[in-house]
Image (tube, rainbow, N blue to C red):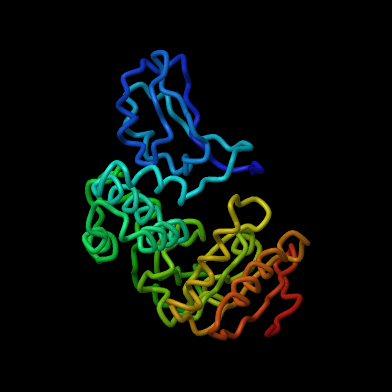
Length: 294
């Protein structure tokens, strides 16, 4: 299997004392204690989300970015169903908590296809995973990782004052990074979506008051972000499931930024539902170079 550059668990063997606390907290089964040290025994089963990190009392586990075999949700579940319903539920909640909707969908589809062969009731799994109750009992404590917990709020009112150049925030939700967002969150339902390259807000004057008003924001960098193939699936879910009204893609003039529009176009091609897409290109000095529906 071809390797790819992605995030994956790294274990500092000098710090590891072999206590094994991390093992049950890796629901994917990627870790084992061997020769008195925790070892990553399967790159295929490490999702790189780091649920095990907070359980290591010695601080021996971290995340690094390197060439590794891609994570495979189906292979993980093939092993995991043997461990029983509670382990499967814990794993799927872990994916849900980190808004890994693509992997979560793959996992549920696999279980549904093999429902008759399972030793537990699939409907009980779905009741736990697909409801709207807060996620509990997972590796990320306190109801989820703060950086990826979905929060909605009202934008601040824009007040025109000759004495102030302050721009009130027009952000309506958190998180905004495409890896972290949940496409099914309430703030994306029937929304006008602004997908902006990371650099735009730092280059464009009056980003909030001119471009973000009445829009739901997502940010991404097609050059530096890893795992952008999952972006296509998330954007497709925003189109098909969240039923966004329009998508505006704001990019910088640099060539690599055009990849953001290509991701949206690929997602749109996957969908039966048609959504208008506008492409906006800004100069590195924050000037509007082009604005057109594509």
